Length: 152
Image 1 (cartoon, helix red, strand yellow):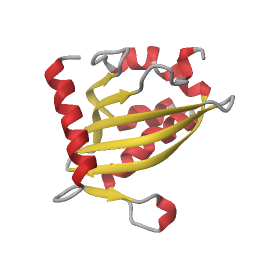
Image 2 (cartoon, helix red, strand yellow):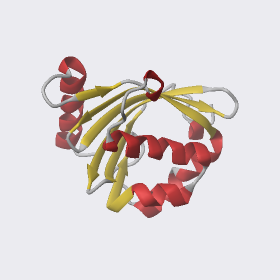
Image 3 (cartoon, one colour):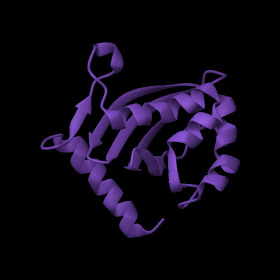
């Protein structure tokens, strides 16, 4: 990943989490009775597609030209995302979204994921949307995390 893009993303994350003011909106969990923002709804559908193992749902919310980045991947396209990442759906039981922060067409999520065998993994996820679809997704996880494909 280019250092400038990584720096920009980290800076956006830091600023958003630190001040949550201006146009940034923090969304409580749906159980708290709040109205979910349209972008948050799309983000929640992303995680639901993994939980349901529903590639058709996933394709509906990913924009043309979608890219995925992580510590292991650098702006891979939908085809490679499906080949490399989608098989993890069959290892994931559920996601618990701790925090969803929406700022314009961008969102940052802190979540816990649970594998089918009860292992926890924790991610910081950055989404950029365009025309109501996910254009870019960056997944941040670190060493020692029981990410589904790590074999731990």
